[in-house]
Amino acid sequence: MQLLNSWYAVALASAVSSDTPHPVQLHGVQLALWRLDDGSVVAAHDRCPHKGASLSAGKVTPKGLACGYHGWCFGADGACVAIPANAADGTIPHRARVRTLPCRESCGLVWVWWDRNPEAPTELDALPSLPDVGPLPSNDDSGWRILEGSVHWQANWLRVLEAFMDLTHAPFVHSGSFGAMAPDQLMPEEQWARDDSVYERVLAPRDRHYRADQGRGLRAWFNLGQDGEADQASDAGVQHIQLWLANVSLVRVVFGDFRISLMTAHVPVSPGVTLNLWRHYRSFLRTPLADSNARGRVDRFMAEDQRMVETLTPLVPDLDGRADLLLGSDVSTLSLRKILRSKRSEGLLV
Ligand code: FES
Ligand SMILES: [Fe+2]
Image 1 (cartoon, rainbow, N blue to C red):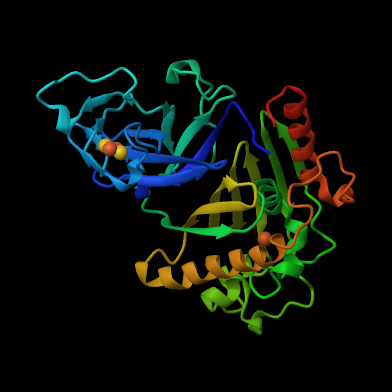
Image 2: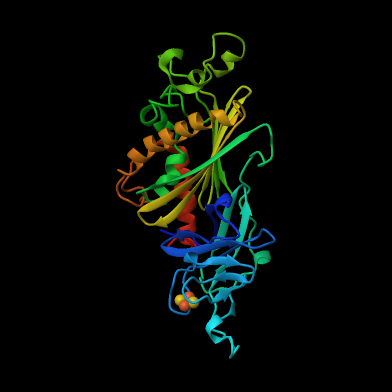
């Protein structure tokens, strides 16, 4: 299923450079991203109109994106600006152009507009603004350390979105990492759905059987003692979990003064493949020396989710609820499916 007329985050901004084009795939369509000298990003269909080469196999030049096969060169509007073999003739046919997509950069991500009509030339100014993802620290905020990564899952993107809105799986799926929470106390204190966004706030009390020496949770990471600041880490923290359609989630965990956030773009590569692009923010242990530990923790809990989410059937969730049995404790999944059903009735989920 595709959500139409929506912004999708499709790449980490740090992966898009002004020398090598960056390939991405969205709903089975191959795209090439590249960066102009002024820093803006261009997104175009990744097929050269000459003989069909992947433009992402070319290179970015001062004139534009040059195809690696015969050097045809395309400007930011997708029009061909140079055909080297025809230099003497000099004419460039109107059909020598690639289709571009409206493209923006925000929150360390590159976003493209996925229109109901893929032929529609769409002016950026005429489009809705990007989802207001946050709160997030800026890249140059010295109070935070930011890490990035990516992982492909063999799962449908809607199942993945739902997994990131679903804290009640944590005590089971993440019992080996951060999931030391009481499984029967994870109902949200606050929950809402509006403006293509779903939010919940959960006070996740520590599992009463949890012991600080279990080697999991924040206390183990800090090697915290029993007094002072350590008390702030003695429960599993307050969790703020929010999703913005089409495909970005943000989990913010607050343990007193210690904060960890994980923003993830769940890119629908194809019906059965989702690319998770993540940015991890921590307000403590900001030294780069702690990065490998932090990365290992993100990789581990992502792998814990992946192992379970890849087993879900049917592949695409049944929005009408006939295949799954959702209860009150699935409140955010229910909210998301309600929004998606209304999109479907407007012809925007196909
Ligand atoms: S296929 Fe791209 S220039 Fe020939
Ligand atoms: Fe999870």
